[in-house]
View: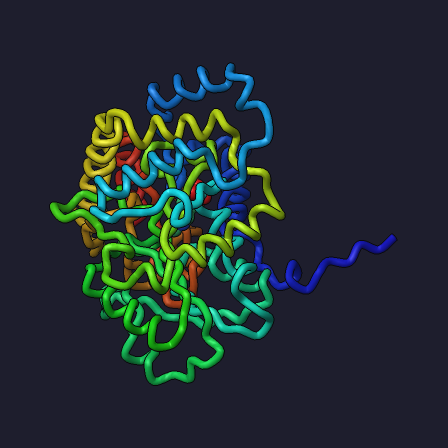
Length: 387
Ligand SMILES: *Cc1c(COP(=O)(O)O)cnc(C)c1O
């Protein structure tokens, strides 16, 4: 029998990070000492107290059954308390909070609840690839908003207001931003709220990196903006904050109708998060944050070592004060792809070409700070020897 793929699957380019992984495996197989700055997956282990909470909860037989798809009441309350403490925003645990099997899962499913075939979805570029594939899966049409250095990597709302937005139903945003490392202000979110309300556009803010910051001011939540709750939701992740990428836990918060729509899709697809992982999530959000604080110190030091090292070689890399990504302007004479290939072939260093995240990423490569300082110094040494 001939196996025919659906149009929506045929449309998908190879998943960016799967491609990087393939290049890495090839280099490792060839016996190279590879320094992997490719995928944003923390190298350090999950904090001990969280592992212990999982261990204990895994022995509780009530966790062995299907989890409620809306999440344990205790988890929803822990999320509400954390949100109040961190952002000063009060959430109703019953209607405004939805635990997710990682934030990627929620981001990938939300267009199914609100997008009809032919509807348009505003998507930043460069960006995390899931917004686009999720839009395609729902039959929607991505409309790209370029994030340029000249505009602080924010979409140009003024320009957007001049466009025909009748078919536009949804907008994805992500600050602090992957891949650029840029942050935004509450003032920007205020403008987004006004824009969204006026044009009836659902805002989906991906807040995976609000806790990963090194500057004095904490990145804001979209929901801190007046009226944000009328127009949108925000997606949070425990993955990067607590080194829990493999555990699969995150959550969506915000507008109750939007949350209900996403919950309805999910109720027909998954059966909730393993109860013991939910217990571990409660532990992560409610107990000592000292391990988290230690982690952020580590990332800050790595950033300083790596960025200063490259700048000592004559590169021009700005210091970003959030996320564990370094968005590196490509030195003259290279395209993004050429630089990534040169680093791989001549220095066994894996990075991601900026244009893999969207066309405005051409001229940049992304490095994830997921190896220790010693290895970052080694990476800089190897790069210095290429020139
Ligand atoms: C890592 C990442 C996510 C996914 O996080 P999970 O909670 O592990 O699914 C979402 N958005 C962005 C921008 C990310 O970089």
